Length: 357
Image 1: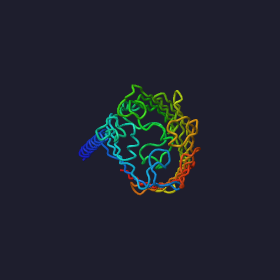
Image 2: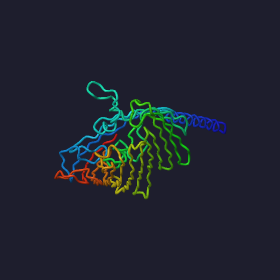
Image 3: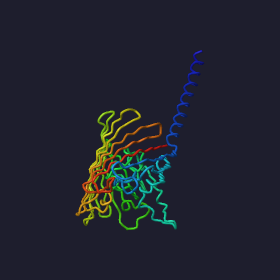
Image 4: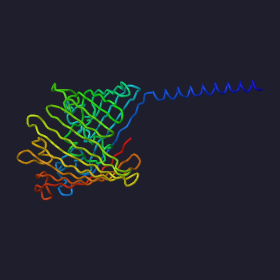
């Protein structure tokens, strides 16, 4: 009887060992098996001025996106990604007005109809995880500067800030990300001039760097004689209350203009499905070429604007609804009122619907 018991025990032990070995092997295979993912978003919105006519497309806040009148389209965003154990790629395509605005400097290869293939490419890059601490990325990727991004899914406010609009959107080049441990990170990059994402027609190159610690990032960019320093971060003040921060300064050589801005993003989770957020931004330019159309300027080319945007965010499954009210107040007469007279302020409302998958 004792021999039989030992034999059964041995069989059981061997069977258990084989089971654990096979299970471990399968688990390791599943962990290392390459993963293909398909994701994206679709968004549309309605925008109306409260203090200005609604039959003129140009009467809108001077920041990027969400500036069309009435019922308007955002974009369709389609992202295909392949994640291997060491290498992978991301192909991020955009279609629609928001996508065209985001890739404004990309369509270098024009066809007979005047369109360019680059107008649909938001990001297109490959990467190599050289080690657990080093990742190399090669291709076209969205900028590392700033609090806001191109995709409306990742922004709390649907309309965008002046800091986002004046800063770079995308880069093409080679960057190296480093995990330094203890919540520290770093990045260095060599790229084409800012927003020239299909090719380099100038022969000049931009350099970028980032130092990060526990969700706070200090960013640097030098491109075409202009230098920008940017701080982006945020803090969880409680389980319901988050405060985001963004501050940046840009200065171009040879009196090419400058801008400075700061934005606060307090956000409060009222419930699991509804949050309120306020973006308060002060932005000023000095002899900057774009400020006449965006925020107005004085005879010396200087301008400034205070923009307050209150946004609600309601989640229904994969659908996000965002009602928004915005007030832009410029130091100069950058807008017109309902009587078509020049004025320093513009009040507008917006309602956006964003579906992500």
